[in-house]
Amino acid sequence: MLRASSQLVDVSLRLVGVNLRVVSVNLRLVGVNLRVVSVITPLVSATSQLVSVTSQLVGVTNQRISATSQLVSATSQLVRVNSQRVRVNSQRVSATTQRIRATSRLVRLTSRAIHRTAMKTQTSLFGIIGCPISVMRTPSVSLVIPMFNEELNIEHAMTAAVEACTKYTDDYEIIIVDDASTDQSPFLVACRAAENPCIRMIRHEHNRKLGGSLKTGFAAAKKDLVLYMDADLPFDPDALGRAMRAMAVTGADLIAGYRLDRTLEGPRRTLYSYLYNGLIGVLFGWPHRDINFSFKLMKREVLDAVELKSEGSLIDAELIVKAKNRGFSIQQIGLDYFPRMRGESHLSSPGVILKIFAELWKLYPEMREVVPAEEVERVVREKRSAAGDVHVADRQPLET
Image (cartoon, rainbow, N blue to C red; front, side, top):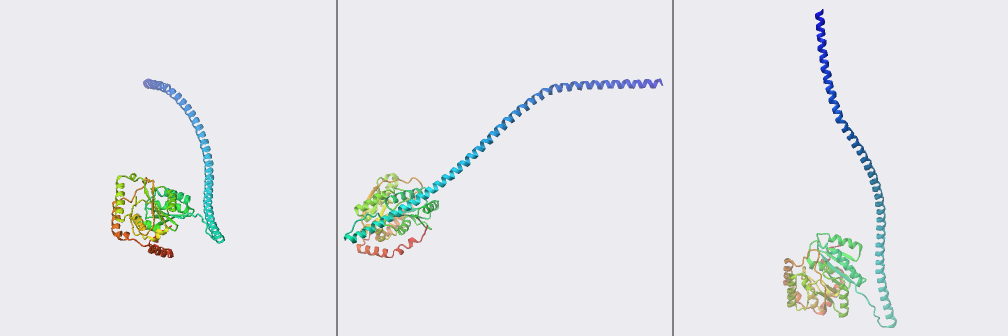
């Protein structure tokens, strides 16, 4: 019994020792936890401060977002107001444009009515007093512009042509011959023609070069005088008034322009020009100064009497030489020359020059022929009597 009790006491003492060790370990853990708490406490404090600062930043950001929203709302209202103003201004511009067009038409109609009244007054007075009374009549004008890939020039050329024509005549037409262009120039002309009924476009399905384009344009011309001008504006179309005045003063049938300064186009083309003018002068004896310059104003009778056959750039010389050989009087005026600034010229390539000499060889006998005045009158009468059949081949391209 005593032995069992002593064993039990021994076991109890061992358990007490173990519990003391556990208590010691727990005390050490408590110490560690206290150290951790001492470290975490400043972090918690810093985190609290960071949360407070972040809250303040969020508040400021919310205020800025609210202000930005108000600014966006005000800007949207301003945009809507400006859009309404733009629509109103566009409507006003459209109405003003329509008024200008209506006024222009009224001016043209009034001018024609005044002309008809003047002619009737002349007839009435002639019947009363038995002698003619002179009434000034402005000749009508057809302006022919050949065009091939001139999207950079054609709009400005049409504007300048309309300004010149409306300034010097009350009856005009602008005929633009599109020689199978591949750029946007036909579209630009079509848009302008839709706005101005005095502008017409005739299109070639295949490229026919300068001569073919001019023959098409000349065949379509209906007015008293016909002017030929390149699309790159080598001269100021306002020279039309000066040429019409020269034609009235001198009684000339054709006014040919020449460049006052040909050196602006470069030494190579200047040399070509001098040599070509000299060759034409030697072959046909015409004291011209600038045979290939595009300014040529002529009466309709000249085109009725002259049958042009050249398809290339020889057509200028062919027109002048044949007009001279049929007895038409020709005068020359000097003009300021403007070299091409935009686009590419197609009139000085080797192919164009070779075509000139080939056609010159072919047409030389015909261009040398002198036609009597009686034959010229007969040809003109026949063409006038059958005006609808003139140059049928050249009227085949579609007209828009």
